[in-house]
Image (tube, rainbow, N blue to C red; front, side, top):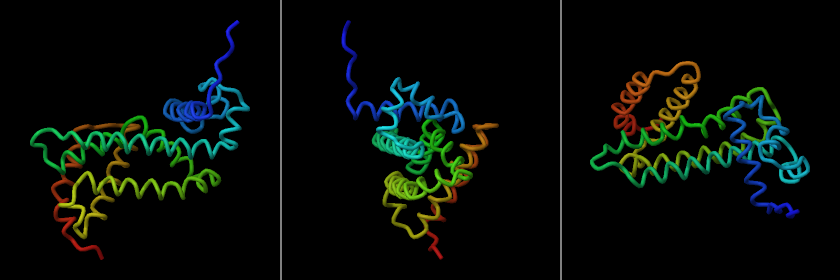
Amino acid sequence: MAAARTINPVEMRKRLIDATVTALVEHGYAGTTTLRVQQMAGVSRGALLHHFPSKSALFVAAVQRVAEQQDRDVREALTAPPAGADRVAFAIDVLRTAMSGPLYVAGYELWMAARTDPELREVLVPYERTVGQGIRELGAEAFGPEYAQLPGFPVAFEMLLELLRGQALTSVLRSSEDTERRVLAAWASAFPALCARASS
């Protein structure tokens, strides 16, 4: 009988985090139990607890994975704009895609759960600040120095993030591609003026 292959710690950790993200997308926060993650990852209970002694620690690692993957996806997309593409429209489209896919759903499940789970909120809040800063830096890169250096850019970009989050939430029950694009087009038309406005 062939000996079972030993899984190295790095691969084991990755397997557990991947299973957590998948479970969040497919089953939601309530359905993402440590038993389900353990079974999806195909590992023992002891292996799970060795890497993640608490459920909250596992979820923080999942949020980190989501943020890192989204960062890579956005940066990769930004390197290949279509010929003649409008910078603002292109940046909006790239960010919209990143904030409406399965990875974003996993993160959103945790944000909503933190509202009523004090332990989860306690561990997520500090990390979320770091993630938020990374998103803002990515936004500055996406829109370029022409806009990012203007005084009103931080507020204008925050408005865009709120719009995209709201659209991601409402799409759970209803989705109108045409309406969503018209709303974003309205924001884009106001974007230069918003950026030029000095923050109070």
